[in-house]
Image (cartoon, rainbow, N blue to C red; front, side, top):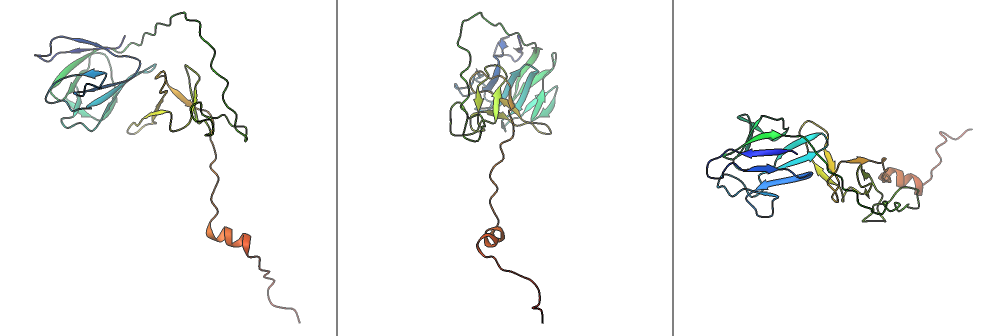
Length: 199
């Protein structure tokens, strides 16, 4: 399991185990990892545990986020790194992802709604074309339903709101192009330009 060890005095040597998906760290009790310390913002940062590892995203915190003393906004975490959130120091103990899959009988995913144009529809918004599918639960979703983690200098990370696993694009939906003013004018006014009249 991916684990962080708190090394700051007064908070004790607690071990934090990260859950799959996005783990929010901050003073706010609504955060998955609530750390009551004066130097930590209400929503300080997010740690996304994916199949690829642990991805850190600073949420514009007041006192910053640091890895081995260097300020960072976004980064992949490695075992042995010292993570500092405000003045709270944590040691990245492990980033291994262990997924225990219980043997539960469950229904296979529902067939996606197919729209008139033959495109799969979003599970939550059947009238909207689906642009993503979860790699784990196979749920189809539109842009509004997928959770996006922006990364500086890289591709965004798309996560399923239901199970927090990675989502992939399922085809591009071409939006209808609006005609320009001249295109509409051309449709309404047809003039024949044949040059000069012949003698």
